[in-house]
Image 1: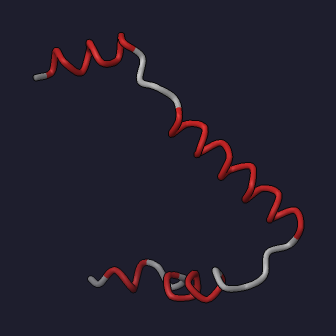
Image 2: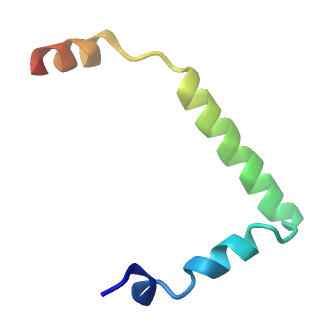
Length: 56
């Protein structure tokens, strides 16, 4: 079974990405981008680093 048969909208998603985004959609897009960027800027807690070190 090919992957295309399970997802008929796969090719359409690329076309939709080029459509203009509404004002509300743009606001959501900006908010998600800010949340993602702030998560990238966060440091990894020492307790998490200690747990990861125990896996080695």
